[in-house]
Image (cartoon, rainbow, N blue to C red; front, side):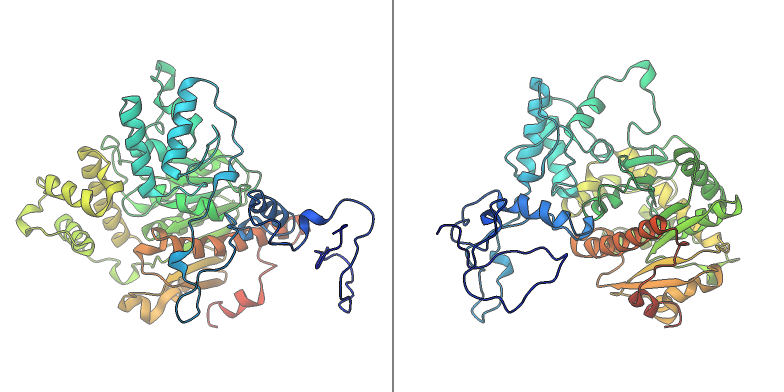
Length: 476
């Protein structure tokens, strides 16, 4: 009563007398009671979560601020006294929206559909689906709802390209003669995953199938100050010719990167085949006199042992991929002219609802891109990149080459230091499962923050590595 508090939060920018005890009356000034440790009084305070997030955002890096805060009377426990995670309520992201309020009936309807699928009370015109708890399976549900309600065909790639209600509405407008754009249908070489932000952009190179939307899961783990762009393979629309070499691809992507960001230093990321391509792009940029301050390679290894040998046939490549995902087929079904597309689409409808949303010609085009990229990898000899490499190893299911050499396989092709981070995941899960994606996001966020800090302090790139990173360096 009368402002007396059992405990009071104090700022950490001055000395604190730990001997203080008992009940203390606050000094004159702003009322401190809203920040008091009084769970009973604030049990039903729905505003506590947003206030706490804002408060943490004042002192913590963006990647360390929790995506949501849930207030509970007590933690649910299992019979043996541990926290029962399965009984915890789902986080409520509803207070995060800061987008404009819809005005027209069409805007109100689109925002309502976003909110419905995400389970939110409301959704703003500029709120990002993937930064508000959305993921690929919910994306499939959303495009289905939008298509059925608005009576229009909504390819899944359109949502990846335009993840806000306002952007998606603009994407669905009839396209005029001046609207022709290689990226409007999601097949452009450079796709803005998040175009806004004050920091240097991170360019994410596609894996073997050619599409870059797999990196959308990183948006929730990297601060809004970081723009992300996806680099996609030519030919995923079935119209453009496929590149003849990985060097040709790297030069093409370097052109796109420098056209988007004319001044470096540059930041590159690649998972799987994309890691090898990102390394080639980094070497190409360096050859042109540009500086690459971040080359992040996620569980990708050079195929140096295969250099000079005959690449595998298309049937062998496709068969290996289909077996890996559990699709049953007969060898005779795999020829340059035939593919069991109907059975494969039925399989995708059960096992991969995201891929099932693609048209038949798109699936076949991605198959051709996958085969071409695999063959180019087989014939590629990695160049030497003079900078550092940030590497992420998927610890589960390592192949013989990975177990034997791991990230050290890149040593002949990297002039700087190789810093490795192990993640508890298999290769596929690294960019498809929430836990590993969050871990990768933390690794990237910490490195990006260090680069930004070094730039503010005028230190050279890499000068502010931590002792933990040093212990993980090549040869540690």
